[in-house]
Amino acid sequence: GGPIVKDKAFFFLNYDGQRNEIPNVVNLDQNLAGLTLPTDPDTQAGLAKLRAKANSWTRGQDQDV
Image (cartoon, rainbow, N blue to C red; front, side, top):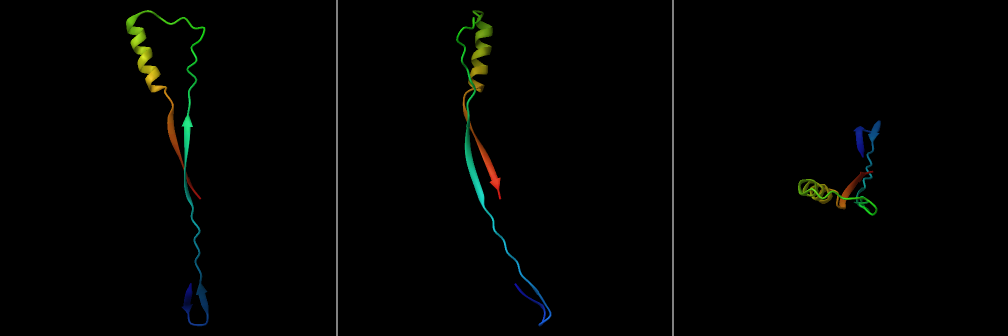
């Protein structure tokens, strides 16, 4: 803070900041019990690619308060 005009007007500033990064693990349920899986090799290859993309990953949650 400080004076704008001597003995007349003043200004005061204050800042309070907080930054948090919270990791959030995302899990997708891949329980395939009871399902009949295809035997076609092309379909199995496609499912393998999809399963690799559906693995758990960590997602960051940025909080600017």
